[in-house]
Amino acid sequence: MGKFPEADAEIVKVKICLRCKARNPITAKKCRKCGSTYFRPKRKERKVGK
Image 1 (cartoon, rainbow, N blue to C red):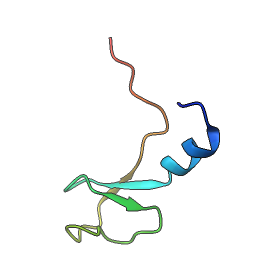
Image 2: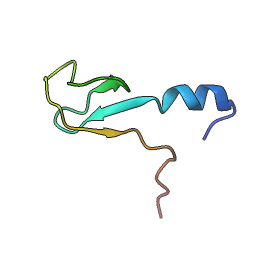
Image 3: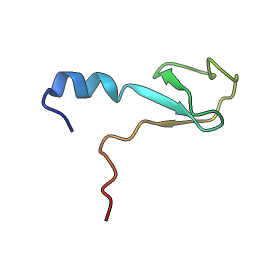
Image 4: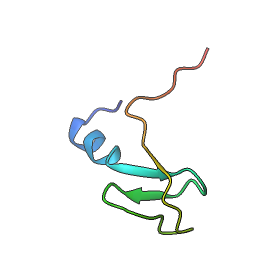
């Protein structure tokens, strides 16, 4: 992704709420904004467009 692998490792330690798209810590059990329990992990690589 970027120039610094240490920074990249920290950036992907995030869960994204599927309901409100808020960023939450990897240890979160519920969303800090909306209280939802539905998460996805942050993508490791960027999506490549056409």
